[in-house]
Amino acid sequence: MAAPGRRRPGRHGGAVVLSRNGRGFAAVVFGPAARVLVRLGVSPDVVTVSGTAAVTAAALTLLPADHLAVGALVLGALVVADNLDGQMARMSNRVSRWGAFLDSTMDRIADAAIFCGVLLWALRHLDGALGAWTAGLALACLVLGGVVPYAKARAEGLGMTADVGLAERADRLLVVLVATLLVGLGLPAAVLTAALGLLAVASAVTVVQRMRTVYVQARDDGAAPGLDGVGGALDGFDPAGGGADPAGDSRAPGRREPDGAGSTNGAAGGAAS
Image (cartoon, rainbow, N blue to C red; front, side, top):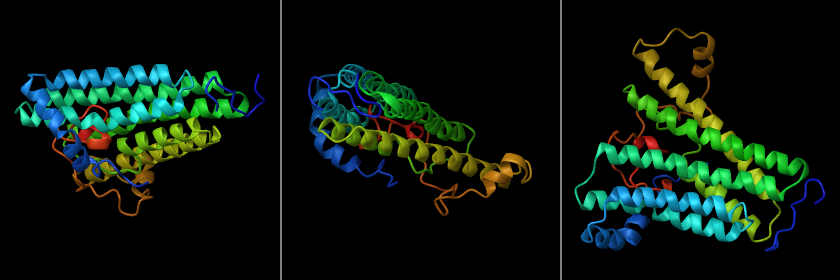
């Protein structure tokens, strides 16, 4: 049994928003592969589902088995390759609302698998307070990682926007995978614990930011009550200094859009981050 707060030895030893910054790179890298797959008649939906299956399998096998470095690299490659299905959809004129829905749904599964993998790793390879904190924070990230995109999607479904926040999908995946890689290369497990704590706080703030953004829009449209209760608290919440501008850059729902590093399955619409 490892000492409390220490990582058990395994067999192998020991808020900048990025969602929109990696798309050009991914388009250049994966454009040729997308063209080949389109010529072969491969459906973008097949690539979407296959990508999710690959992420899920890698996250739930490599990470719990303490293959942190390999797992982080494999998952990172799959995340970057996420742009592939979106490019294929545009090249083959198969952009659709169904594709956007499928991609966003598969993204939620892939994200949950990654944080579940980290959670299982913590339960199997950490002891004491450090293990409890790491597992708890991984669970918090898993839950909040579903609430963040839901808040945005629900706002868009009501005809409003919620394209604000400290922790969009690309940011969450980048932070957790880099921290996982560093721990796999020999850094203390506390590095991953701290990263998960940062993500949990940033995700919670993002949820409140999006709630405030929607509240302001609803209030201005006369569809929200006066400044009392929760509404009053939200009206005074703006940690990003103006980040609640409802006129943010919101992609139209129902479109397959490239998301580069910000999506594990490539064809995400505006509600995917």
